[in-house]
Structure formats: structure tokens, C-alpha cells
Length: 182
Image (cartoon, rainbow, N blue to C red; front, side, top):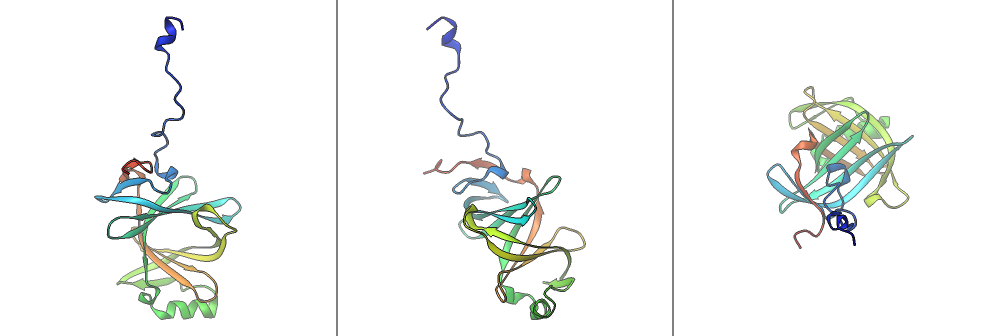
């Protein structure tokens, strides 16, 4: 060992704290959002065909579950969504889907009017695995663009709905890898 070898940095393998960004979340990671600490419970993705994908992380806190979603077009678009019981939507929405294979162009939910923005068919990969489950998805937003509503159809009569808001990446802080508090 030479004199200058003493000052060289030893290679101890990959740094466990690099890459702690929102797009790199993994199951077990912790992060803070909206004055709560959340744990990543699941990590899914949707394949919409032709290389178009979106990602979803199920986040849990002590009293609720939310879904962080990321869509990439020219830049990342983030949203937080909460599932709602489909029976809270007007039954005419589902009658319309059954009759026309598409939902109506507008939906009123909790006195907010949502307008159809996008529809897509694709495959859902739970925790990034499996052959992918087929689904149809319709995305709505209000006039302000600050409230979101989505409907997913899994088979003939299996529907899920959620409401949400757009968020920014900077709103999520203190990202920690799995196992740091255990």
C-alpha cells in the first residue's frame, strides 16, 4: 500500500441511499406525503400497448390506503387516487357502459361534473408479474383539472372506480428504503 492509496475511497458496493426517488419506489419503502408517513405495499404497472406504460404504487398509512400513479408522456404526470365503491356512482353510468360499450361523456359525482378525457384498453401487471389481466379504463377530470375520476372495467360486469387529484413529485419527501426502521 503506497502513501496515496490511503486516501483512495474504498469500494463498499452500491450506495443504498442513491436512487431514492419517486419513480424508483419499491415494496417496503417509506415516504412522507400530506403530513403522514406511508409505506409502499404494492407496485404495479399497466401496459397500454405500443410501449405506453403507467405505474401505480399502493401506499398505506395507519388509517387509509391511497394509490400513487405515474403516467409518462413527454414528462411525468403524478396523481393520488382513492378507490370509491362503484355503487356511489349513478347506476346510469354502468347501464350506459353495458348498452354502448363506453361510459357517458360526463359524470356527476358528489356535485362535481367530470368530463371524459381519455379511454384505453390494456393489461394490468400486479406487482410487475404475471401474464397481465385485461382491462378497459376511462379517465375523467373536472373543468379545473384539479379533480380526477376513473373507471376500470375488468370483464363484463366487474367495475372499479376511484377519485383523485394531480400531485407534484416535490410533495413526497423523506423516501427511505425498506427495512430502515425494522
